[in-house]
Figure 1 (cartoon, one colour):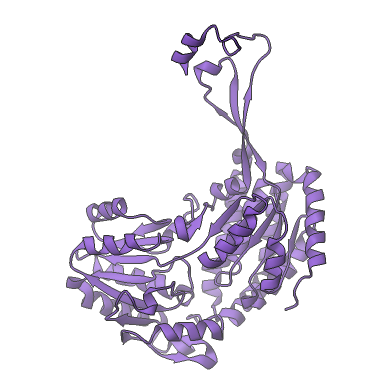
Figure 2: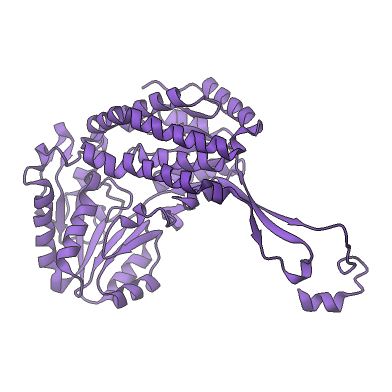
Length: 458
């Protein structure tokens, strides 16, 4: 894949800045038309995109649709249904001291934006943000990951065919292109990736005081109490860890299970994996593979400590790593020091829930938090810990609800999106007080003769 040149990048940004200044993107009718155009383009290019998923990640059409294409189509429909309402100025209650003025919030687009997406969900994590950019009235430069080059090229073809480059344009390439992009001045940057690269993006954005949304990651815990429904927990954990072969930022990263139910839970997780994907997952048409050899080698290294009690099969030539449960894990093992991003599930056990709370809280704040157990226990855990989001008695599903804000906290991210929150992420909430001229009360003016009365009203 050829790197987009600096000259091209700078030219695109200049053209987008001029197009945004024309005011055309502020029109709600224009935004609706562009959202519908994006939807039609996805439907037209769906086959090519799905084939690219198979080439890049060995991802089946069914999984590609459910976790990528279908989510974006649903997000587009949701914005089409609601954008007119969201974009209307909102009247706010004006305090007595400012009467007879009135107060409103106006929602205006931030301007020329940069959207940078990772390889693990290369279509959804780019296009979901694009929906927010269109909905709010911004223009956007789109930068996909080169590691899933098939999907990146399929998206480039779709975008180039559908939109004028002064409105939406895609650039391609390596880290050098990322560096060039981050040297430019944007009005907003939306980045999805690792915390390490997120720090680089935030540092670069700070040079121009550019606002950012950083969707990062981390080690999301999955906790199973002894009073949990173990069968349900096992099935939902297996599902959450196997989707995209665990290459999911909100996948259960490690399992913390009560000693009393540990053996039963681990046995059932293995049984459900076999039930869902069969016993020969290397040759399965629905079990994804690892993105590249570099990621494969890293994951293989994480499997060298502890005791493998399920799975463990690897094949470097096919970039295949089986779903693997590793027991006898210690907190200082490499598998517990970094986000796994693969189908490996390390297991810790506990007898008192305070052990879990202490462990979770002494580490970086996770992107997701999963707890299986009774409501009373769940409430205690939520009050004792923090995370970007999460589920009680399930995994991943908080991401699917577009009525909820999605994002991290601390090391796992900054800012939220999905649904209306995407519209807000790409918008400036402009606060305006309108004061009539038919009356001009003297209270606020020097020499402050009415200070005592004003003091009571403030």
